[in-house]
Amino acid sequence: AQTVTQSQPEMSVQEAETVTLSCTYDTSESDYYLFWYKQPPSRQMILVIRQEAYKQQNATENRFSVNFQKAAKSFSLKISDSQLGDAAMYFCAYRRFQGAQKLVFGQGTRLTINP
Amino acid sequence: EPEVTQTPSHQVTQMGQEVILRCVPISNHLYFYWYRQILGQKVEFLVSFYNNEISEKSEIFDDQFSVERPDGSNFTLKIRSTKLEDSAMYFCASSEGPLSYEQYFGPGTRLTVT
Image 1 (cartoon, one colour):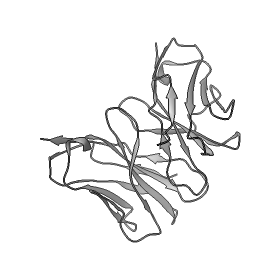
Image 2 (cartoon, one colour; image 1 turned 180 degrees about the horizontal axis):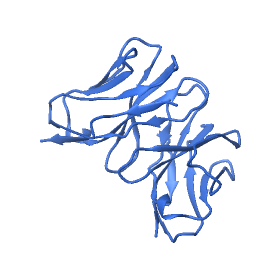
Image 3 (cartoon, helix red, strand yellow; image 1 turned 45 degrees about the vertical axis):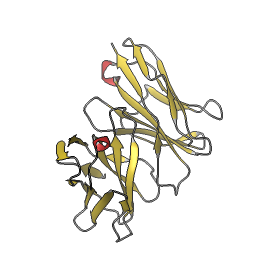
């Protein structure tokens, strides 16, 4: 079974600074998707960024980028120029490429932005 | 922009009672999911549903749980006899199809079992 681990329960960063959230996963499959979801206090899960395992290039979405290390099974999220609105729980998630559609989530990292 | 909606936002029920949580997925989506999040814990998959049948379920999804798409728009999760440990946030999600990578989540229903 696939597992996702986020080893940082909490992180904090100064506004406008850069922060990196860590995620590792375990799978025996070669093709899969990885995601970072944001859950603000409103509790709704919002997709931040995705990475297809077959792509070597790291995904980027504006201020958000990932460092995908397939051999190490590592998938970290970098947030540049942190803003107050980035404060939230961040969940790393895994999904098989084909077949089962379910998302497997990590435990989450609570990110605090200090003004 | 289309979105997944869920009702009610908060449901309080007594242990042993039946509850039905409702979701309206995005209209052209074909895959539907329920997840739950016990307070302070990670989000856990419960069940996925496609073509009017369950495509996958977790070990959490036992005989006390059922899902249904009673009409062309609603997707429901029923808990037959609630237990204290069913207290959680329940999220509905939907996606377009098997090759679609993104699941769109609803705002959740907070279920409190007393």
